[in-house]
Image (cartoon, rainbow, N blue to C red; front, top):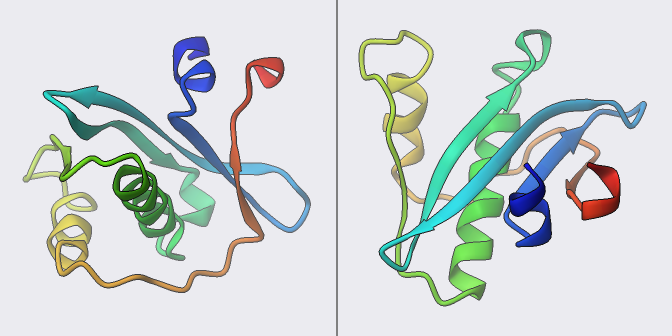
Length: 108
């Protein structure tokens, strides 16, 4: 995880109590942003946190000159395919999380 933090390629979503509830880490593959892992605590799923994390990656990718954001997932996992299918429309989303935090090396 240190490489992601040092490279500025990891974000954590926190709740109102500043507790982590989700995170995303990103690699650069063939010049594109590749979502290596995105995860949201089960009690906080279906609240837009995963979408917000992916949107953060899209913003970072655009600001970093990456032309695409990609990921690999299992289509037959019930909670994966529908979310990614909906998300591919490219709309920015408003979600009820307190903030997204860039993970820093000191926080490792």
